[in-house]
Amino acid sequence: MLYGADSFFVIGAAVLYRTDAVILGSVAFLLFSRVYLPQIRYISLVADFFPLFLILGIAISGILMRYFFKTHVVAVKQLAMGLVSLSPVIPEGIGSIFYVHLFLICVLLMYFPFSKLMHMGGVFLSPTRNMANNSRMVRYINPWNYPVHVHTYEEYENDFREKMKKAGLPVEKE
Image (tube, rainbow, N blue to C red):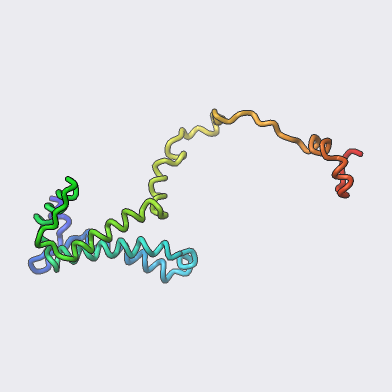
């Protein structure tokens, strides 16, 4: 059912997945908006383009593997099982495009914790999602805040009045 829905278009013998077109279109739109819209171009940094190019490279190499350069799936499974069991084996039949794809995925996974992409996880930890929405009915007092002695201006002037007069600063009480 899902396979048939995703592979609606048929080109020759290969099936074109809509998800391939969607991911390429989305990344192209994000790149286009970063380059051509002046408001977004103004706030864009090199660090904003790097993950987009990584995702674009991953998508293109995956599409190339799917449609043009066939990869031996059993050999890929053998490689993956060898890596998981800590006894890596490099089988025959895996094309270089697979290693490019795997390298780009590994670079993205290494870059992810140190990038702006990590802010995505904060959506699920934000107080607006996790706290009750009753701030007007119940006053929230932070339980770990201890009372702090506040040094008022009157106390400050009492402590430093002579020094303030010597510096030529105006004082309220003589």
